[in-house]
Length: 261
Image 1 (cartoon, helix red, strand yellow):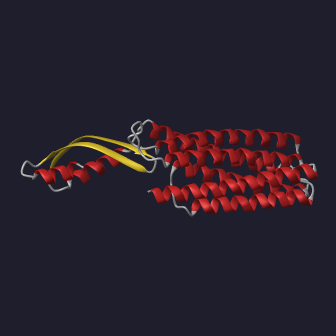
Image 2: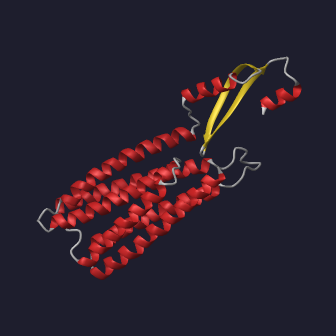
Image 3: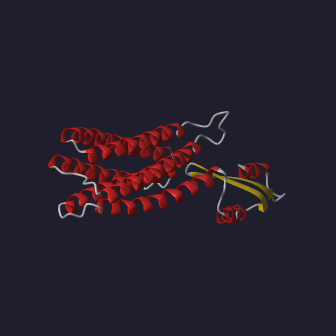
């Protein structure tokens, strides 16, 4: 489990460094080329960097071992990070919708020179890199999902910006705004589901099917006569189970002690 957490932490660190490079490149090129759109995309990237930084910090904190005040460990911090990240992505979605509406009604052209196009292409390459490194971890925690959704949103918005530049050359300047509205809608849907699942996890909600599986697994143990009052909660990637069991009176003390633990 510790190895998985460390791999996840490394993936977050690489993603953070990658998106930070996008901030530097886009803001610098945006200023040089006098492109408001590229500067705006760089500011969005800065917001994404803050999200990844927060996820990385919370992930590192969740690695702390159990102590007297946190007898279940610090894994719940990762769930909290997932919820905060989901809220931040929700805000990003609202900002994308606002910017899309402005582009549609005012027909703003995003990019008008070669330097700006290079900046957007660089952002697309970095977004693909972030999606890949978060996907290959094969870890399905809430914080990884936030990071992955964020990277996918970056990839989508940067790709749409590049397509809009091409279409703008043919006089279709609202293409970026229309496509961004669709992207924002998808992101709102995904982050809403993510936020809901993290809230359920923070309130110790558990799938009844998992409770039944835990009861069946306990009753299948040789020497267990009954099982009641099962309590389950998810902490990070772990599902913890507390239960009251009745053991066969013929069991030895050593065997009974082993089963109880």
